[in-house]
Length: 103
Ligand SMILES: [Zn+2]
Image 1 (cartoon, rainbow, N blue to C red):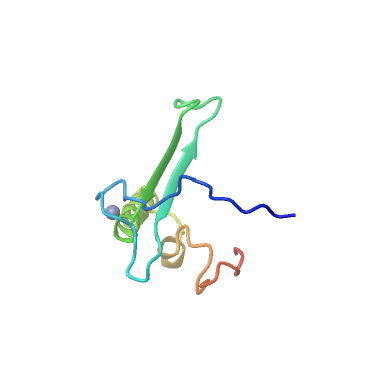
Image 2 (cartoon, rainbow, N blue to C red; image 1 turned 90 degrees about the vertical axis):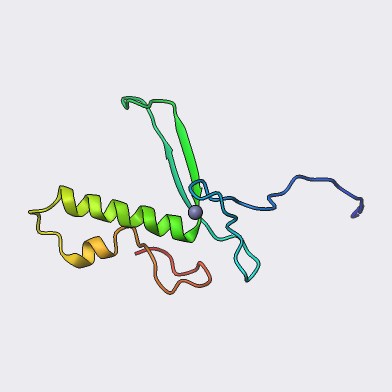
């Protein structure tokens, strides 16, 4: 038997980018953001610290461009091809419904 009643609950109404402080709500109505997170464990300098940052699309790709540049700088003489750096972190493409899995 189902008993229907009114329930008051907290819900996420917006996610604000941790860099530019803009809402991550897009014109289509949803919240679109990337998450940078870490949980540092035993043996690290930051043992026990947890981080989580939400980034809007522009700030996410700005951050990714910075990371790619660091990769290029730190591996100037390596055999990494341009595709490896260009697709750094990309695990799926054309995955519009979240069902493409990972490569
Ligand atoms: Zn932003």
